[in-house]
Length: 137
Image 1 (tube, helix red, strand yellow):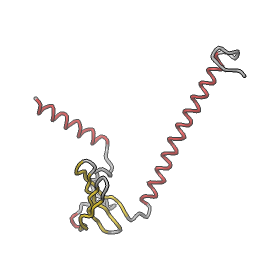
Image 2 (cartoon, rainbow, N blue to C red):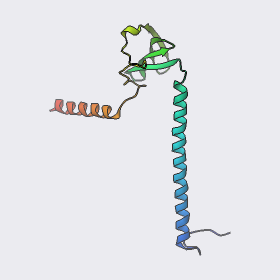
Image 3 (spheres, rainbow, N blue to C red):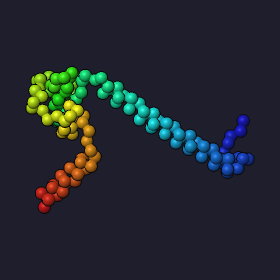
Image 4 (cartoon, rainbow, N blue to C red):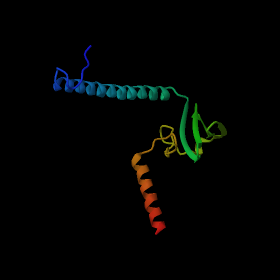
């Protein structure tokens, strides 16, 4: 039984090739994991929206682990409160009072479940920090 170390009879090139092949296999495994995760996410996102009768239109954070959300179930809109361990029905909403775009989702979807643009978040943080600095002076 031979133990392969750097100082064995094969020389340094054999060890270098072994390390390089291990790194290549590691990178391939990482790439496969990344692309398979992206693929599964697309499938799940497609399944969630395809023929879905329930959609979260907009949500707003009220506190730590507490949200109020507008949910579309079928063709009706409802206001619900979401807590850490409970969901509370508030009221059925009239569509005349909602600001909806052509897809039925609200235009201000910057809540916990909506899409947020990173540039907008970063600019809000910078503006808040600069305002705090001015107030401190």
